[in-house]
Length: 222
Picture 1: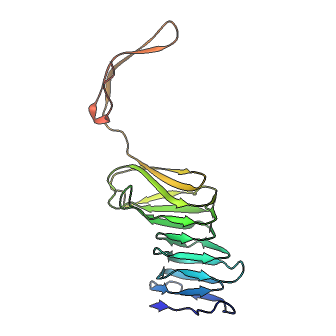
Picture 2: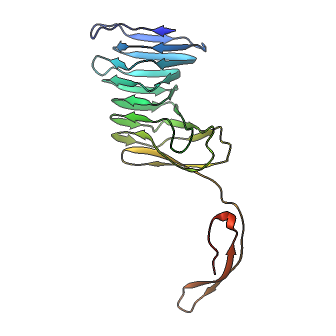
Picture 3: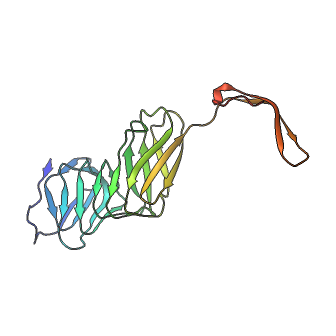
């Protein structure tokens, strides 16, 4: 189903799409809104085109259900607020993104270098939200770079959860001045044997003999 909102740039009424418990999908196409509240229960709202919200300081709020950016851009004078709902898919938000009441950002990664990303034009306030990363098909660890880019970042995710992890990665997130990255690390394997450490008179230490199982990918010590 496609939802075609009015194309006027002024005087539109406020729009609120509510359907608690419905598992249907709604597409918003060629949209201009003054304000928008999405409350879809188990449903998903897809952006088929860029969404422009006119009017001063009007917010787009996801109360429940999921907003899929679907590669599109949300232009709003106010904030995009994920309030107990979920934001997913690659795309752009030109102003602020705010996560409240454990709002969720869910992104997919097919590999370390192929993944969803969201660009925030201004502030990303993620203090009260969580990140869910679906890594179905990812077989090797490494840096998943620029999951989030933003002009200014506030806070850290309350939790980072991996879905469809077939390897058993340990996840670490990093928060930089203008982006948020995730590093997937695999647990070490193998054994270390026959390592002898001697203390020298000057307080330094010497590795006298030793071998390291090559499955660790580390050269022998000797």
